[in-house]
Length: 261
Image (cartoon, helix red, strand yellow):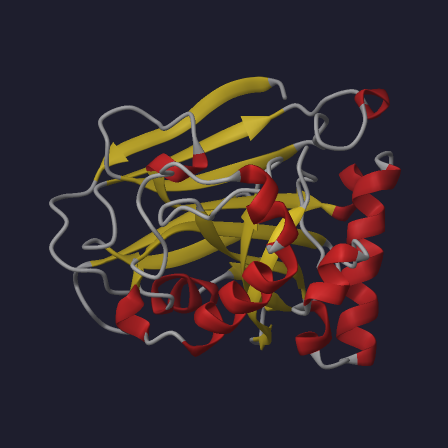
């Protein structure tokens, strides 16, 4: 992916507790770039960066090529993070016009449009059978490794965007899940049909171990379907306090997304 220019990075203040923007709160931070804007409470993150990407050649293919877009990153470290898992929230905004040359990305757009038009029960995408049949929920950018697990999937709709949100885990290996490798994502479209929005928030959860300890790969492989089913059930049934940050952080941000025009 080609980085063209770092447009904006600024210091916000100390993190206190996770929260999202409350209307009229003087501690809110309002960010507008191009046609996109959002509002967040300054206690969510100390810093925000906007980075513009020129895009990669479509010929590079899925998992390694991304279309032109700009990314809004909320984070706490001094420098703009290189990894999603060092951020609070990462939001990518794509013009659908720029996605047209990327057939594998347009497949994700079309899949999301179909879900929003037909509104099937998203629970059917959370089963072991769906995962083993590679029946995935839309996600941009495409990842080198597929979604090993999905949970808590639901539709999201505001005056400005509509889409889906869910917890996912991506890995090439079939091994026990780690507590800090999950992410909560929103995949959506602006209501005017001009933009695709991909927002992801890394999660840490007490439901899974922090480190990968010794295990028998052969025995674990034989138990893989049962492990997936148990993991999905654990995530779906978890209490809000089992996740850090709270899922409401991203939900609250989505409610503030707006597009000019």
